[in-house]
Each structure stands twice: as C-alpha cells, then as structure tokens.
Image 1 (spheres, rainbow, N blue to C red):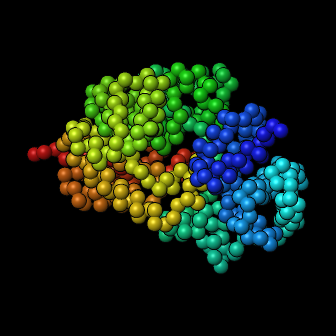
Image 2: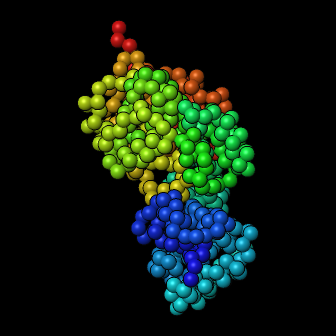
Image 3: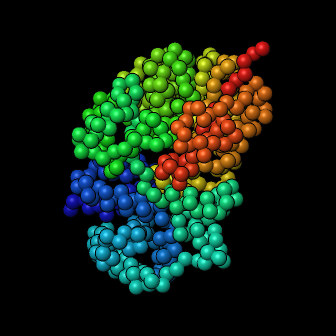
Length: 449
C-alpha cells in the first residue's frame, strides 16, 4: 500500500522518539523517500511539527480517556493517538471523524488488535472535547501557560523570571508559529531587487526582509533547491536573524577573518560575500564531517576566499595566527530556534543552560588572544537566555580590560534599535520580528599605546 501523509508523519514521530532523530532532519529524509503530492507534503509537515510542538498539551487531553498510562503504550500507538488528537484540537479543516477513521485504519495495518483501543480512546476524547479544560491561570499561571502554549513548565518559569510573565507568554506563543522561509541574496552575484523581480516572474510570492538588507521572505514553502537562483549560487537559505551576525562583524576586503564554529557555513559564506571574496576566511568546526557542508555551500556560491579546518577551536586557534576579525557563533541551548526545531524544548533540562554557558565563556577566553589590537570580535548565539548571552559578554569584559564594547547600531537596520542592549549587543526575540531568537554582541580589542 502506498505511504500516506499520516503514515509518513507517524514514521517521523517514531524516529524522533525512539532514535532521538531531530524533527527537521527526520522529516526531510522521510519526504525524500515518498512520492506524496505537495498537498500531502504540507499535511505531513503540519502533523509532525504540530504533534511534536504540542506534545505535553496533547498528553494532557489524552490522559482522561486512558486506563493504561500513556508511557506504557507501544510507541506507535502513543504517537498515533497524539497525532490524531492534534488534528481534533488544532486542525479545524479536518473533520474529527475523518481523522479518527484514518487513525483506526493505520492501527489495523500496524497491529489489528490495537485498532479497537485506538478507536475507543479517540472517540472518548472527542466526546469529552468540550469539557477538557486547562488548569486555572489564576491558581497556577506557570502550568496554565505551559499547557496553553505547549512548553515545559521549567522553561516557562525561567523565562518569566528573566523577562516577566507577559514577555514569557509572548515568547511561548511565538514558538508555535510556523517560521517563514528566508533567502539570503549572494551580494557578489545579484542584488535583492533583481532576485525579487525574478521570483515574481516565476509566480513566487516574496517580499524584502525588514531585518536584513540581504534577506527575502518567501510567502509559501517550496523546494528551494529547484530555484534557478539557488542552483546558480545567487542565493542561499538563512534566517533573517542569522544574517545579522556577519553584518555586525562588518568584515572588509583583504582582511583575515576567523569563523570559530562555522558549520554548516551560512555565516561563513556571508562573511566572504561581504568581503567581496577578497581576503581570507578561516572556517573551523569541531566536526570533521561538517567541513564538507561548508565547502559545498561555498562552492555553490562561487566563493574562493574560504579555507576550512577541522578541529576544536580551543586547539586550532593556537597555531592559526592573528586575525583582523573573529566571529564566535557559540554552541548554545538553541532556545531561540524552537519554532524550527520543536523537539528541542523537550530535550533540554534546566542544567543544560549553566553547563553550556561555562563552555561559551571558555571559548570566548580562548579565541580572544588571536584578535589583533584594534580588531573586532562578534559573539553570537541562537538563544534568548541572558545567562548565555549578555551575562557571558559582561563577564568577559570584566576579565579582559584590553577589550571594550563597540557600538552595534551602525551595522543594523533602524527597525532593530529597540532590541539593543548595552550599546554593543542586540537581543532579538522570536515574537519581535517573526524571525529566530538571536543574540549578537560586538567587541573591540583596544589598540596598544
């Protein structure tokens, strides 16, 4: 029997739960192996991201109809129930009985004895749908918010402590919005206006980014690899917030630049483009197999100034010489990109943040001596946690009197000025510009007197 959208989605959900696969990679790999219509590809994507993103809320709604605890069910049964309840509660365009009937048919194919159980649980949930209420917001704000917006309670609590309840709830809500697909124009081969005009001629809806002068936002998802502009190296895929990192560093033609944690190469290639491909960008990544990713994107974009090295930057930097500019896009908790990787919020635990912040401080201290006097260092992460961001920068400056904050506003578009912290840093939140959550700080090494 041909694989359906729901069968495919269930396989991806099982890969995420049983093998620890990442949702975006597992979905991409599964879709490549199917011959689903574009409509079914859209449904599969919605079911995967929606079910993963809303998991704790779906479990809450399922529990009253279960005699057997959810965690004791077979994985495929558990995920089939979650996926169907997601349709019942969140996809109004799918008739409830159609969703249940499809689930029962899947159950018959995968384990006939389970079909009656699946049917009973789902119909019981549907009967109770109007009586299933979330915990009171007044009595338990954290639990209410965690279930309303489908986040771990500990995450909601630390965001409330860091930003206040209103901002924390806005952040949770934004994380459930499907991200738009963004393209970065390869400025060495095209202009943004030229690419926008080309997309319009191809019947593809798009508009210029308000966040980055190099960004284009597509109105609908599509296979970007099939675009002539992509194949010819005139654009690449990159989120708007991520585009700001290279802009903040502002590398100049002929300079020597170090990109410390470079894979998969989006920021590396942007640096080379901004330099007019004149100079040297040394791209380092600890994972040797990811070096090929950087080289592939550089080759597609026609960039010759990038030199790759595999290894831990803490060992590589010692013999790499000095640099005019350094980019440290540090490993982080990733809590700014949950809308792209919804499974990430369920993988994290509170201790992860303190642990990764210690690594970030270590990396920053290690690479700083490789910057020449007068040079610029940009520290960035794709998270929203102050402990990983502004706290790391302030601690570094306190310990390194030879470094000073450098104004970041001149390198950003005016719309971002409200997100600036301490003059040298910007913290973008997912709810502000519909882009990823990102932190970027610009520091300068003082000239020797």
